[in-house]
Image (cartoon, rainbow, N blue to C red; front, side):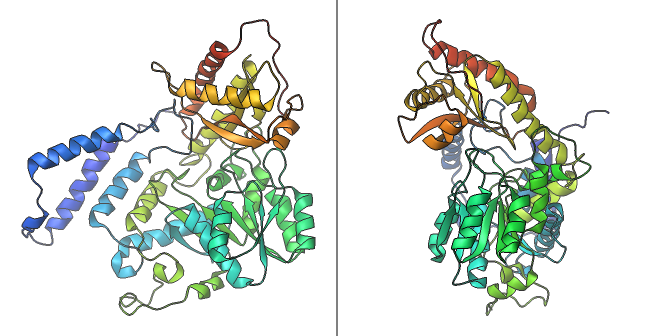
Length: 479
């Protein structure tokens, strides 16, 4: 099959901005107010400084960056966003951006279908996953004002923060060593506490773990409890759980399929949806929850009797450009498992397997926990099998690799509890409460090609930092 050419951002941006400029001219020429002018010399100085300061970023675009959940948007999204951003529509009300409001309704329907939710589901885009989860927890509180939320102790910290905002009590649920909600702990929690909604995670941002959604939802339903799935990071991986998707070792397809039974789902297109920040989405199975948003505005909702998105959103002004960019991207790269977005996601998941295999093959690194998505955790091997030695070695390898002047590699560190680490690696001695390990987020498809060589470089760096040969190393594998 011939290789499809990659669109260039420059060509798409030029086409997009030229089209908008031509459209603007159809409305008639006018003189810009002189107050908007900028002194050319000052502008040159400002832009020189600005562009120079941007060089202080890490190379998020490059495979050598495998640290946090960061990457540039797809060129299609970049150009589409820029075109709409020049017009600057506001998707709060239909008259603030009629085309992008309609695009938002269409992409929300597309996301609901990808997640297996019914076509009657209610949803809208948000500024990101935090606001999407806030709205889900707010609706949970409105439905059950006197009940509590149950959230795994490894869930994203946003749930605790937003619960504080909502003045809603959270009951923590234990997780296993690999960061997945423990079903026995969940069952006890549902028996012992008056729970209204359980939050499950489809892809934690730490270990990339996926809660046992397929088993937890029936348990919650048996107790008459709602389920919210935080799929902000991992939601798009549901494409790989469809019947026609390729099989990938260790990928928990059945757990992603079960998302379709959730009462609400949060998902972030600015992660695996290839979008600029910020673009999140909240979806509700029951459209009747729209009643909680009901409000009026004396100057906003007058151009149409159709649904204005601001009528079902806690946020007011929202960038129409975010909807336009997502719409354009999903038309160019559809939500299908074997073409469009699917192969991009599959490459990221395979990259994590390649990275893991390379770690296992090295003599200076060890896997912490096998990956379920595209996040890998691993650690340097140490002569002294203590958490203190592990913590220091992880931090040193992280710093040294990142600051290599000739060939830097950017990873991240993640702190795991002593219980989790000693469960995964029983030979380790817990002389401290927690310790850092290394973590790599392989969310660029190019990582599939570069994963093995990057691990080899990290292994070489770890070897250069290790004591002289002949010492005994801790070589236990991951649980």
